[in-house]
Image (tube, rainbow, N blue to C red; front, side, top):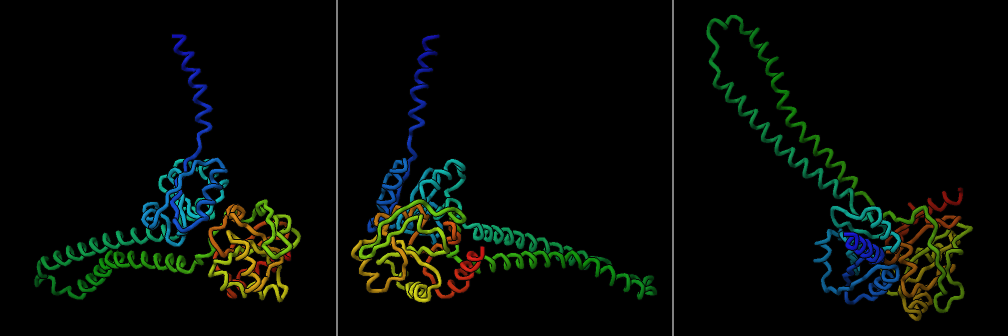
Amino acid sequence: MIRILMVSILLGLVAAPAAAQEKTKVTLYRNPNCNCCLDYAEYLRGAGFEVTVDSKQDLAVVRKQLHVPEKFEGCHVSVIGKYAVEGHVSADVIKKLLAEHPAPSRAEAAMTQPMAEFDFVQELAMLVVKAAAGLLAITVVAGASVLLIRYLLWHRSPAPTARTMSVGPILATSGSASDSVHRWPGRIFFLVPLTAFLGIAVILAWGMNRDPSAIPSALIRKPVPEFALPPVKGRTLGLASADLNGEVSLVNVFASWCTACREEHPVFMHLNAASIVPVHGLNYNDQPDDAERWLNTMGDPYTRTGADINGRTAIDWGVYGVPETFVITKDGHIAHKHIGAMTPKVLEDTILPLIRRLRQQ
């Protein structure tokens, strides 16, 4: 018995380190035409994950099974345990998510932060709609039943006799008051669904007026990630985290192959020409010659440009896709993240007022 116990203890001691060293398994479903997915897989492997890459011609089927919202769809989705991680999410964020929520009840879609991709407003609206629909059905059935019962009872009641004719006015008055009292339950049955639908209208109006590009980032109010990038080909100044201290600035993530980057480029050219705010460029997953040709052709509005050829720095920044623009404070913290093309309206309504406030702090 003692020998068996000692062997069990030794086996336990051997198995414990092996279990501790077991890597978290990741299955990355990717579009075969995208190369950044392979870079992200290597990034996760370097962070200690065991990654299996599975190329899929139609990722829509996989995303539908994982409940990934359509607006977050990109070139790949990673399945980690019961989580679906969409886009280039930092390994540190994923590890924190798994440590804090190791056993979720359903797959969650993550983009720039682990739990932000769960569309709370949409889920709440659907829940309210379903509850209101059920309430309406119950109210209609109950109201119809009450009205039917009242109708049958009134029409089966005996007609008044001649002995009650002398007090007709009194009975009529009493009957009017009684009818008024009896009308209240029926009115309540119709007021309840009306109130429910007004509440639904308010919630849906709020959800529809939300800016889909205003997706919160896990790095808001945190220091910019540590990085140091060489300059884009043909430029002399690279971009590093140390360059983002001392003044309010913008960091624009762009690429020569990005169509939306062409749309927003005149906005940054205007900012540079008017010396409104320093704009730094982070060139994402681009070929050096293509990036140089693009800036020479379109114009270079950037004070500094960093060449993130393998996309690792963008991953640390929580970049989901290009273009994206970050507002950086004087002490090197991320104050705001805008996803999508920068427009004159967004600039005037959101970015410039924020810059003015940050400069006064």
